Length: 208
Ligand code: HEM
Image: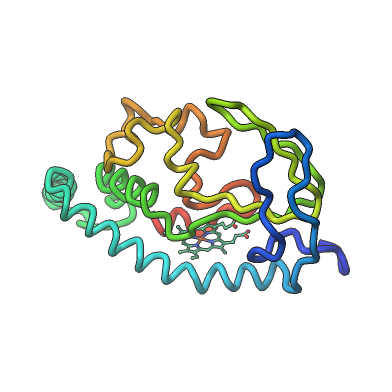
């Protein structure tokens, strides 16, 4: 942004997160100043964190596959078939195109990330006040005052019961063509492992 303008990226929680209030428009904490830093610092931080996230994600994925032998078998079979076909045609056995075709493995990765998001929450700094409406029993409205930092925990929105069937179970098939569970509500950011909006993860394709 222009020199002197406030950075657009929110830094880690420097203001109290708005808490629930049954009365619409009730303020729950006084806005406070944010710490220094800016978009560049945030990006460097994200790049540093990315390597660790890839490592964690790798460990989680192996653990999930080891405890779900049916999915491990399907992922291995998929790779064996792919390698066999490519071998017959004299092509590169594992290239970018081959990796893209490992649909079952991708669904396992996606499902593992849904259940074990390496980044625990998205943080945003509210420049203007706005109203959030909840869904389900006891619909409520909350006003987020300007200046507050909003923490949006992934373990909650990656497990919304109106989006994900039996949300606590490891079920890669939910991302298969027959179900595509999260797509129906994609506009509501219901799969947020890689963030969303203008600051969505630039390493998403690489990570997957
Ligand atoms: C499993 C691996 C990864 C996960 C789960 C992940 C997750 C995320 C999330 C949730 C955000 C958004 C943060 C926010 O909006 O507050 C983000 C941003 C970012 N990620 Fe990743 N990330 C991963 C891997 C990577 C890799 C491999 C790279 C680089 C090669 C990378 C580079 C970035 C950058 C530069 C941003 C900041 C984008 C911006 O602010 O405009 N990430 N990532």
